[in-house]
Image (cartoon, rainbow, N blue to C red; front, side, top):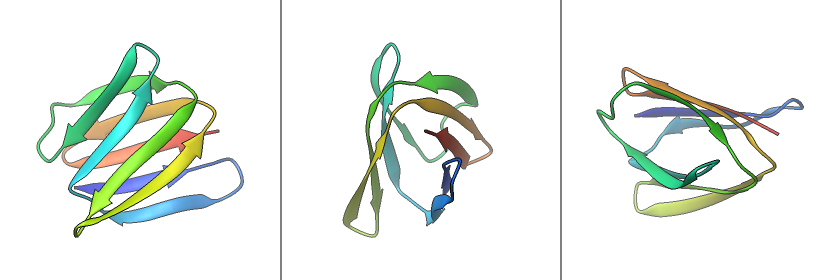
Length: 77
């Protein structure tokens, strides 16, 4: 799936990933390829992004996630 992580200052990440784990306002959750369409709010915490056997972390203060047609867009503070 394609992932974009965008902050007010800059684009933090753009590329493909196999999974994304996120700090939701109702608890942590994960999205994978072919996940159902979703729009949700994010709490402060870490985004864990896995791609090609490597893991990256991004600290956020909150934000919004939209996933549709294997494209994830995260607007993060």
